Length: 379
Image 1 (cartoon, rainbow, N blue to C red):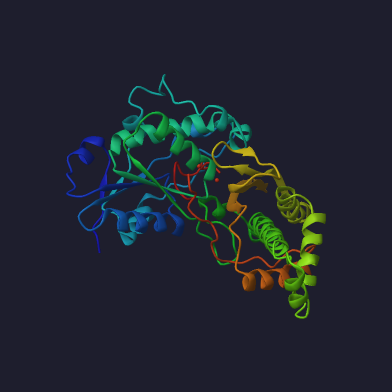
Image 2: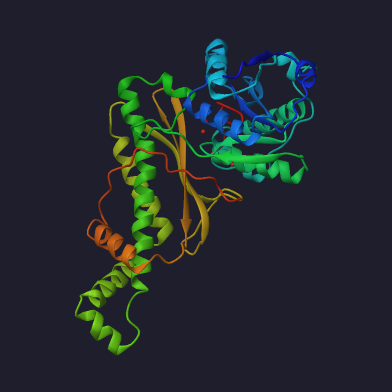
């Protein structure tokens, strides 16, 4: 197993000369299995000749007034063990003075319009602070590749945009969200939840899964509708097997159903509305179905990759989660579509049982942004 070095200054880090690629995983500490997944992925990318650097830095710039900077967990000794077991070569844990030697920086990176939506609207200035520290840490660690969690989808999108717009010479890799067995996305803030609060918090992932399942049903119905026979002879042949009736039913249901995007939002909203009546209740901040390129809401005519994102507060703890969805998916094989239609048409107005495995995928193109949790890490 790799012996992990603890370094406190950029000079110590720069004195190291990796023979291969350097991969960096940025965190604010309180490491969990989601971070370990990022580190293991970084190890695979860097290879045996490369170097994996994990940064641990609680960035004061991305905490707003009344947020949890003072109570944010500091667990460096435990973090070292997690990093070492996952294959990190270095834990870089600089002081605030090391990162901001002249005090709070006078020149900062501004997130622009994308940074004012969703998380940015709820937490003004958060993304400016996040991008500023990510830029600083990229300069301090000098990586070839940097890995970030898909759970912080808006953050990931903004980091990609910054790297592209400002010509940072680094590759950005997204890593899928890691979930607990019950579906709750891993977060350093989960430790704040009481058992009853945790029960309520499960509504975030359940809402996303309900939206995903409604999306799958809508896509299956539309694909099945495309199977309506186009010739009389084929129609008569299929009619004997019941196929044309099934296709016609699918076409009618698909036509009568709400728009694809609105149907997804409605399915997720139903779960969240139910959770608002629990004790303790879930206090919704936002539910959004957005284009990951700019985090604006999509319409029913949208095709391509989208992100279904949610943020809510349970007790004093604010949590976020998201799932990627693809609209206008390629036509599925007839057998698969038929099975999906048979399963989903009958249950079109019910919520499917949520799965417990991670369903997030790497986006093709950035709690949405890392809540104040981990700059660029699964939180």
